[in-house]
Length: 304
Image (cartoon, rainbow, N blue to C red; front, side):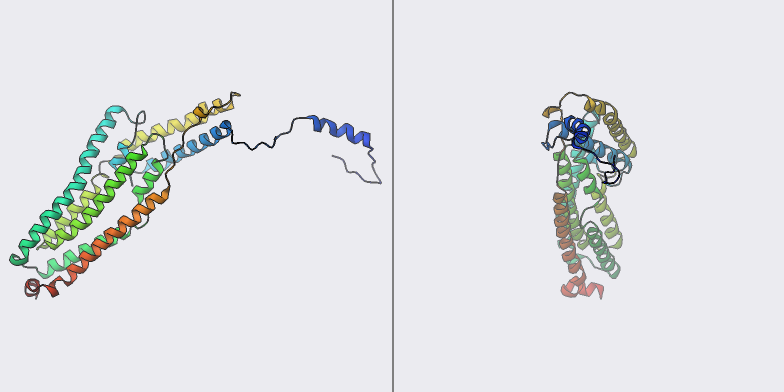
């Protein structure tokens, strides 16, 4: 550039015109057009998809914590072969029936046993203390998942990936939430119908196994296959898709990858209200266990 001063240089109008006219005639670097063109949306979608897949194979699918069978059943071909996908669906239906039906049957059977025990069985000090402690433990265990737990974080992330069905993911979450409510109600009924420390311990452990049965069916080998697919798709975006975007051909709306959207507010809302209802059930049951010996005469005589 030039430093123009009155003492050193003097540039007349013709010289200024000769230097700046070529710049005015060149095409501008930015036209000032901010239109949301298909090509721009294509670029943003590709970058977002690449980021989703990178985080998926590096973080989400690297650890089985938070995964359950319903997440796997929500996957689709070609990430999961069709035979394995049908197997996941079949097992997911069986597990869903187990998680929903078992606590309901336990509630019914526990209520019947409690009516029989009211006049036939003795409640001892150790049983009274142990079953109350199990109820308090269940209460604090529910408080741990007040906002969002690991399972809901995994579902929220997988819902953005095109290979996972959002409806199936939400359906699996609904099964887990209903199962949690039924188990928390069942643990109160079953503990109230228990008259020995051994029965209280075995029943409490069995009920929490029902909540975890879908998580226990997820293995690291299955997640490794999902990681491999996401890693391959990520590198395809970096190579093949990058070259396609660099081509001068204009992009159509059909070429733009579809990005799914599922607000995390739904998961927070479901988690908080289900946890609140579960804690209410456990609080009411714990208070009933605590005051039961001092209200019902048949218990007062047995633990005195």
